[in-house]
Length: 474
Image 1 (spheres, rainbow, N blue to C red):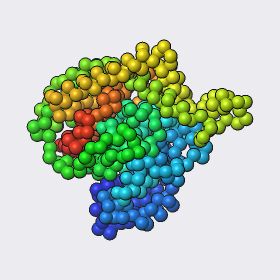
Image 2 (cartoon, one colour; image 1 turned 90 degrees about the vertical axis):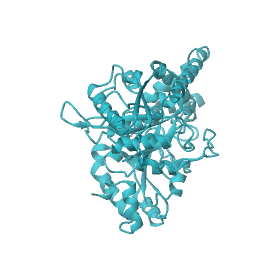
Image 3 (cartoon, one colour; image 1 turned 45 degrees about the horizontal axis):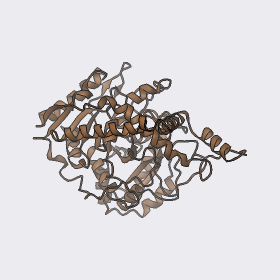
Image 4 (cartoon, one colour; image 1 turned 135 degrees about the horizontal axis):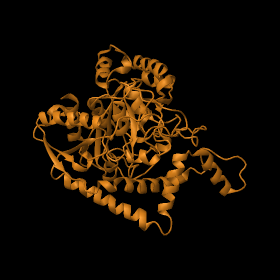
């Protein structure tokens, strides 16, 4: 087995025993990238030379000492490009600082290695809105890997990354993890600093790990969690050791099955696979409880008011003046703004900026954005009420397996609706994880991954990971 295909736990054991070096792992990853990236396209760039310089001084006594971690291309890493998969930033912008999560990874001994592809500015669910290249699903290259963290999930699935960081605004870690057959964790809002993440929707964004197994996710969450004074939304909460007690099992736990998430619209094969994983948890001693999340029907509409509104505000900084794409020979400042943004942004980003600007405009703010915030509160209350009855909630991650490339190109609404099971967790600020179920078989005979989604209460990652570990190993 190549080093590139092994877990963090396995590699750490070999590193501390002196059987391998961090440079050996990097060499294996570089070879895997050369072999897979032509078909999969998970990486936009990688700098082996710089990574090896860090490897030479890696402190192997640290929890992640010597482990390379792939980074989604909307997280700033000092001296590396940060394009957000957009033409706007592809013209030479270089990150002038490390994001807090990158500083934390380095402090834990890890080596940031490679920039993974994504939907442009994290706006999409298939990694097809990237302006810099197509990423495909390693299990079937005619299909999408999911998004927006599709490059990170595809890299881990293709064994060209040991683990990766992604960001999740409405399912952008969990959904590609499900489609690619890996583990994807969205931490609670405030658990992980957002400082250095290029903002899409500031009240929804969270950085999290994409890994080969649950134990590796716990290791990475240990490294990147904690209060950060540079992020005003970062919570001052004691960070437990998420790796401790992973194998305690689920006996005596109550796991909720929301009736709204198991209604019509789920592919029958996906439903069968998810049900089989749920049955294993029940056999392991968990009690299944039917619950209701009554405002689920409003989640997609609420999300697609709040997220574009915040995106329109956040992306106003990309104006052609300070950094990024700059229109040539503008007639005046207004012409500079207009043409720089028109040339630099892709169609999906423009669509969301226009929608966000509309719902924030005079005369519509209260009717749309103000009302959406009230509905968001109701959705959060639904989860709060549910967690008075159960320890966690189970559901599919997506109503279907990975779609064919371009399946939603002419109908973005269908792509938006596919996020129905993941969006609410971001609106409520709770934690969630995707764990692989048994794969299903496509019409062409290809085995396609399916994910079980486990949702825990706010700051409930420790128990969430315990349940996920049981789902993975039962």
